[in-house]
Amino acid sequence: MKNIFDFTMKELENFVEPKFRAKQIYEWIYKKNVDDFAQMLNLPKEIRQSLAQNFYLDPLKCVRSETSSDGSIKYLFALKDGKTIESVLLPMKDELRDENEKIIRHARYSICVSSQVGCKIGCSFCLTAKGGFVRNLTPGEIVAQIWLIKKMNAIPYERRVNVVYMGMGEPLNNLDNVAKAVQILKENDGLAIAPRRQTISTSGLSTQIKKLGEMDLGVLLAISLHAVDDELREKLMPINRAYNIASIMQAVREFPIDLRKRVMFEYLMIDGVNDRPSDAKTLVKLLHGIRAKVNLIYFNPHEGSSFGRPSPENMIKFQDYLCAHGITCTIRQSKGLDISAACGQLKQRNEQGKILAQSSISADKISNK
Ligand code: SAH
Ligand code: SF4
Image (cartoon, rainbow, N blue to C red; front, side, top):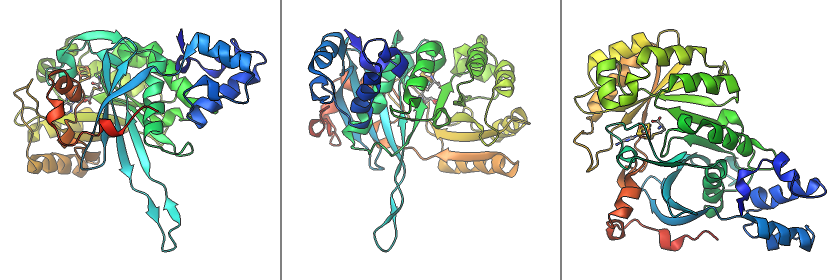
């Protein structure tokens, strides 16, 4: 049996006669959210039966979900082999209506997806790293995270969402499958999410950044920098021994990016570790000549780490310094902090069996259907 979400439209055309049936199937799945071949009523019965014998439409099952006070919802999904991954729905902007109740701006969402079960990179601050690497996700397992979240939240088909590959795993260690997911998500008769609405976040695998650039997919790039000198970065992210800061900056400079867009640098602020004024100063120098924007992230404390969350004053000082030196810098408002925001935390708590004690759980209210 094959996961239908693994297939581009062209590939699906090889399985059905005549070819236009592939477009119909795509529309049933992605536009009408149908998750049963029997419901695809404009297809002849034999095709529906043959599809059901060869493909499945349920690569993910929702095991848990937690809703944060800020409206973000974190999901724990089980894959066919029972392994679990996390994805998050992040409401970015609320709907706006005029005095006649006419919608003048639709709500905007970002969906944060996982690209692997576990991760090989082993960053010291990250819970995903603690469980080690298990396996790569297939393109369809990535695509289905977005499809299922849109479906479960009844987000209308026309409402475009942004996708960020910032969940569990290192996307550039699973580059071929991530690149294929980008293509499937882009399909006009599918979810139609343009690559410029998809951001791939990496711990800085310079050679893979180069490869991604050569693929010229049109995606946006985010670099998880987190430290400005190699010594500290090696302690936080051992991958820095193989790919140091200079090599990452070089790869970023060569990365093809739309002139209206910027490369995002994520900077996890850890109390007393990398949040000093001297760090801000070095960061400004590092980014010289790069169309960059910096996103400062509060470290989210967890049991697996002795690091602490910085004070808001320190965050603002750091931000002010960057802004004063011409660098666009935002502070990521800790979406979902109260629901164990950083990836890996819901999974861990689920495994520890603690989760049922939480009051914010709404999994029982949500089913995949
Ligand atoms: N592996 C890729 C993809 C995203 S990793 C990368 O590292 O870029 C998941 C994201 O969660 C990263 O941006 C990481 O910095 C962040 N993260 C990990 N642990 C965190 C924590 N304890 N608090 C806040 N953010 C964390
Ligand atoms: Fe992997 Fe990213 Fe976590 Fe580092 S921060 S261990 S690269 S998921």
